[in-house]
Length: 201
Image 1: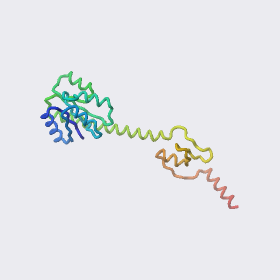
Image 2: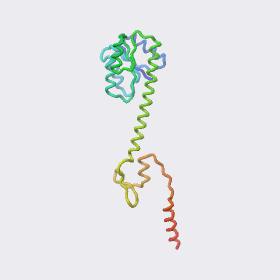
Image 3: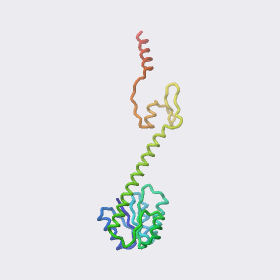
Image 4: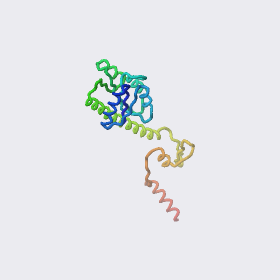
């Protein structure tokens, strides 16, 4: 998974990048909040975020607020990193919409554990979002056959949206995933046999 590290302090940014890379993450870095926001505006943006609280341009909590406001298609998991380690600051970060909070200086093992939780959570959220999209697509296909369908009372052909008349099975095949196997009902069988007998006479 890609992870974004937004940190204006160069030594801290390099340390985070080195640690995360050694743990198997693909890391993108930003030296300020404006650069971080530009990266998060790209189509293939990172979904796991490590954001410094105070940095030039846009601060970490404000980035989180903006992400929540634009309801992105891909879920994010954001961790605010700051030297403010008091309870009030943690509450403010979480109230802004951050998923986690870690104070400086941080323990490497604790950071790895918190990032790992973010990785797993984001994976579950992404899988859930994909499942919801699949259900929405399936529901849309089902709804294609809802409503009033114009059908000829004699030949049973159906008029489509382009004002053309189609066989019933053709129309249903185009608007659903149904497959047809053709047969003959007992009533039609009797009629056809009777007509054949008449033709032989």
